[in-house]
Image (cartoon, one colour):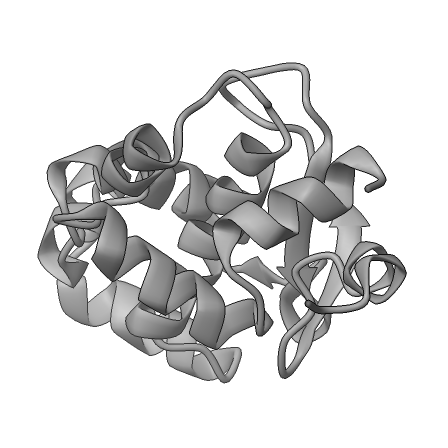
Length: 151
Protein backbone atom coordinates (compact mmCIF):
# COMPACT_ATOMS: atom_id res chain seq x y z
CA UNK A 1 0.00 0.00 0.00
CA UNK A 2 1.49 3.39 -1.00
CA UNK A 3 2.34 5.94 1.65
CA UNK A 4 -0.79 8.11 1.92
CA UNK A 5 1.02 11.21 3.13
CA UNK A 6 3.34 10.95 0.14
CA UNK A 7 0.27 10.79 -2.11
CA UNK A 8 -1.13 13.94 -0.56
CA UNK A 9 2.18 15.74 -1.04
CA UNK A 10 2.50 14.63 -4.63
CA UNK A 11 -1.06 15.47 -5.63
CA UNK A 12 -1.06 14.78 -9.35
CA UNK A 13 2.69 15.09 -9.54
CA UNK A 14 4.31 13.42 -12.45
CA UNK A 15 7.20 14.47 -14.65
CA UNK A 16 7.01 18.21 -15.16
CA UNK A 17 3.73 18.71 -13.29
CA UNK A 18 3.32 20.51 -10.00
CA UNK A 19 0.28 20.98 -7.81
CA UNK A 20 -1.39 24.33 -8.10
CA UNK A 21 -4.84 25.61 -7.31
CA UNK A 22 -6.90 25.76 -10.47
CA UNK A 23 -10.58 26.68 -10.39
CA UNK A 24 -12.77 24.02 -11.95
CA UNK A 25 -15.22 25.10 -14.61
CA UNK A 26 -17.67 22.44 -13.44
CA UNK A 27 -17.55 22.86 -9.66
CA UNK A 28 -16.31 24.87 -6.74
CA UNK A 29 -13.45 22.40 -6.22
CA UNK A 30 -10.03 24.00 -6.53
CA UNK A 31 -7.69 21.02 -6.78
CA UNK A 32 -5.76 20.61 -10.00
CA UNK A 33 -2.41 20.48 -11.65
CA UNK A 34 -0.74 22.69 -14.21
CA UNK A 35 2.63 22.02 -15.73
CA UNK A 36 5.24 24.49 -14.47
CA UNK A 37 6.38 25.40 -17.96
CA UNK A 38 2.87 26.43 -19.05
CA UNK A 39 1.39 27.93 -15.89
CA UNK A 40 1.31 31.50 -17.22
CA UNK A 41 2.07 31.20 -20.93
CA UNK A 42 -0.01 33.28 -23.30
CA UNK A 43 -0.18 32.16 -26.88
CA UNK A 44 -0.58 35.21 -29.17
CA UNK A 45 -4.28 35.73 -29.86
CA UNK A 46 -5.08 32.57 -27.88
CA UNK A 47 -4.74 32.27 -24.14
CA UNK A 48 -3.65 28.87 -22.95
CA UNK A 49 -6.50 28.80 -20.43
CA UNK A 50 -8.97 29.18 -23.28
CA UNK A 51 -7.35 26.29 -25.16
CA UNK A 52 -7.54 24.14 -22.01
CA UNK A 53 -11.17 25.11 -21.51
CA UNK A 54 -12.06 24.11 -25.06
CA UNK A 55 -10.25 20.79 -24.66
CA UNK A 56 -12.00 20.14 -21.33
CA UNK A 57 -15.37 20.82 -22.95
CA UNK A 58 -14.64 18.39 -25.77
CA UNK A 59 -13.26 15.57 -23.59
CA UNK A 60 -16.58 13.82 -22.82
CA UNK A 61 -16.96 13.12 -26.55
CA UNK A 62 -13.55 11.41 -26.65
CA UNK A 63 -10.04 12.55 -27.50
CA UNK A 64 -10.43 16.01 -29.09
CA UNK A 65 -8.52 16.42 -32.34
CA UNK A 66 -6.38 19.41 -33.16
CA UNK A 67 -8.91 20.36 -35.85
CA UNK A 68 -11.83 20.27 -33.38
CA UNK A 69 -10.00 22.48 -30.89
CA UNK A 70 -8.87 24.91 -33.60
CA UNK A 71 -12.41 25.18 -34.94
CA UNK A 72 -13.74 26.07 -31.48
CA UNK A 73 -11.03 28.74 -31.17
CA UNK A 74 -11.73 30.06 -34.67
CA UNK A 75 -8.17 29.52 -35.92
CA UNK A 76 -6.72 27.08 -38.43
CA UNK A 77 -5.29 23.81 -37.09
CA UNK A 78 -1.86 24.74 -38.42
CA UNK A 79 -1.95 28.13 -36.67
CA UNK A 80 -2.87 26.49 -33.38
CA UNK A 81 -0.16 23.88 -33.84
CA UNK A 82 2.43 26.54 -34.65
CA UNK A 83 1.50 28.69 -31.65
CA UNK A 84 1.65 25.73 -29.33
CA UNK A 85 5.05 24.78 -30.77
CA UNK A 86 6.29 28.33 -30.18
CA UNK A 87 5.77 27.57 -26.48
CA UNK A 88 7.27 24.06 -26.64
CA UNK A 89 3.85 22.40 -26.39
CA UNK A 90 1.98 19.92 -28.50
CA UNK A 91 -1.72 19.29 -28.79
CA UNK A 92 -1.26 15.82 -27.28
CA UNK A 93 0.60 17.22 -24.26
CA UNK A 94 -2.16 19.74 -23.64
CA UNK A 95 -4.87 17.07 -23.91
CA UNK A 96 -3.00 14.83 -21.48
CA UNK A 97 -2.46 17.69 -19.00
CA UNK A 98 -6.10 18.74 -19.25
CA UNK A 99 -7.27 15.16 -18.69
CA UNK A 100 -5.05 14.87 -15.61
CA UNK A 101 -6.26 18.16 -14.18
CA UNK A 102 -9.92 17.31 -14.77
CA UNK A 103 -9.45 13.82 -13.32
CA UNK A 104 -7.86 15.22 -10.15
CA UNK A 105 -10.67 17.75 -9.76
CA UNK A 106 -13.33 15.08 -10.17
CA UNK A 107 -11.58 12.61 -7.87
CA UNK A 108 -11.67 15.24 -5.13
CA UNK A 109 -15.47 15.09 -5.34
CA UNK A 110 -16.33 11.97 -3.35
CA UNK A 111 -19.78 11.58 -4.92
CA UNK A 112 -18.45 11.24 -8.50
CA UNK A 113 -17.93 7.60 -9.45
CA UNK A 114 -14.73 6.53 -11.20
CA UNK A 115 -16.69 5.25 -14.21
CA UNK A 116 -18.21 8.75 -14.57
CA UNK A 117 -14.76 10.33 -14.32
CA UNK A 118 -13.53 8.00 -17.07
CA UNK A 119 -16.30 9.20 -19.38
CA UNK A 120 -15.86 12.88 -18.47
CA UNK A 121 -12.15 12.70 -19.25
CA UNK A 122 -12.71 11.06 -22.63
CA UNK A 123 -11.80 7.44 -21.92
CA UNK A 124 -13.76 4.58 -23.44
CA UNK A 125 -13.75 2.55 -20.22
CA UNK A 126 -12.92 2.83 -16.52
CA UNK A 127 -10.05 0.36 -16.97
CA UNK A 128 -8.45 2.53 -19.68
CA UNK A 129 -8.79 5.56 -17.39
CA UNK A 130 -7.32 3.66 -14.43
CA UNK A 131 -4.29 2.54 -16.47
CA UNK A 132 -3.68 6.06 -17.78
CA UNK A 133 -4.12 7.67 -14.35
CA UNK A 134 -1.75 5.17 -12.78
CA UNK A 135 0.89 5.90 -15.43
CA UNK A 136 0.50 9.66 -14.80
CA UNK A 137 0.56 9.63 -11.01
CA UNK A 138 1.93 6.28 -9.89
CA UNK A 139 -1.27 5.45 -7.99
CA UNK A 140 -4.70 4.19 -8.89
CA UNK A 141 -7.62 6.65 -8.92
CA UNK A 142 -9.10 4.96 -5.84
CA UNK A 143 -5.82 5.17 -3.87
CA UNK A 144 -5.42 8.78 -4.94
CA UNK A 145 -8.96 9.59 -3.76
CA UNK A 146 -8.34 7.92 -0.38
CA UNK A 147 -5.17 9.99 -0.05
CA UNK A 148 -7.23 13.16 -0.56
CA UNK A 149 -9.57 12.11 2.23
CA UNK A 150 -6.66 11.86 4.67
CA UNK A 151 -6.66 8.12 5.27
